[in-house]
Length: 246
Length: 112
Ligand code: SF4
Ligand code: FES
Image (cartoon, rainbow over all chains, first blue to last red; front, side):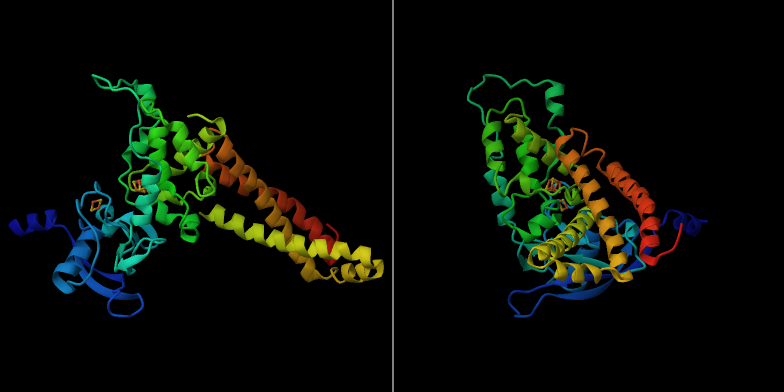
């Protein structure tokens, strides 16, 4: 009887092949694919498979992760050609009859294996002034109605994982483009009734490398692990620029 | 993604057609005989099929262009972008199916 129950509750495990894009700046070689056969549980995510490789097979495999629960945004990578968080992608949801391809996000310089240089991404974020700008110094909290909040609620969910910006073909060819993530975070303040610098941010994004670079490809919306309607936010900023105010 | 890719491909294709078209039309100012000679070389089935492709490309590019404009300027545009993509495909397909038989009957000289 006992064995029967064990089998009932057991999580099936299976072997998958992972092709991981490897690059080491110190060995003088080009980037290349390396394959690993990994035994995973039905409940495992791609991140668990990468952990298994790093901890049990090849300690030199380099990738970023911190929270492992979809909160910090450090493990965005290109899995089977789509940008996702490794910690939010269940292996069983991918086609496991085929190898799984894991590579760094595109458009940013690769530093080692799956780690890219995020500085240009953060710089674009800094450039849109991602902080509250208000002239008064209130004694109490600044009040806001639910209706006012709903205007930018969606864009407050961003975790700066860069999945959107590095899925954008415009960003791939033109690294100067602010990119969806910066625009999402500008949107978060432009439409905030408590903020007073909407015009400043609108002006920053009304640039050759600003919102007008967006060609409505919708890759960013598909890539966002937080389900933010990124292209919609960009369109709203475009319209705000045309109006000259939020 | 695919609407965007198709839009680029059809855009570039239409550009090359326009380039050739401007060149051959400009020829008439040099010499009408040369113009006639060039135009008569177009009357072969291969060019006839290319024209079919051109019409398909223009239909998609024009209609999807309207879709992109709506995405940018209509408040609900982003929400309905996917629906609008399929509407673009449907209208383009209907218009194309109306055009293709007539055009092919001219190219290959049969009655419909
Ligand atoms: S908008 Fe979404 S995909 Fe882009 S950085 Fe923020 S959380 Fe990541
Ligand atoms: S590790 Fe923090 S979001 Fe994936």
